[in-house]
Image 1 (spheres, helix red, strand yellow):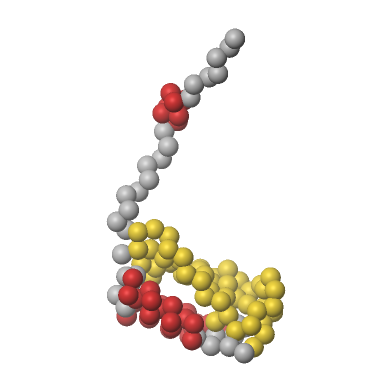
Image 2 (tube, rainbow, N blue to C red; image 1 turned 30 degrees about the vertical axis):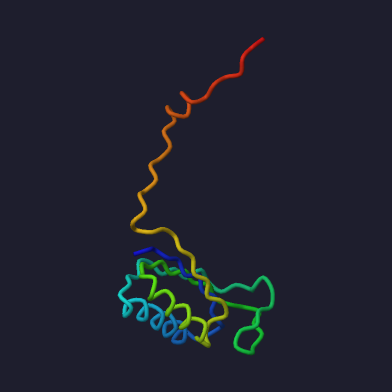
Length: 122
């Protein structure tokens, strides 16, 4: 299954509101057969510009990152769920990598040096 990163901008909420929103999102991923790898709170910040979400204008938001693994069918349902969540201003989902892709091996400096050809001196 592919690995995804979910960037959330949430409205200004109470501590209980934030925990409820994160719990709903994490439980949805887990109930769809996914695994939540990491949740990170990036804090409250002023938005780069005024954003409208669910018929309200917002100037401040709290940023969160959630890394998880989930199948393609679950991702479609998760997108629909996040779009209807009234506590979120902007949910953005990015595919990080697939578990089936081979890991890129680090570039070997010796190979680079051998492939370099200096220009000819005339």
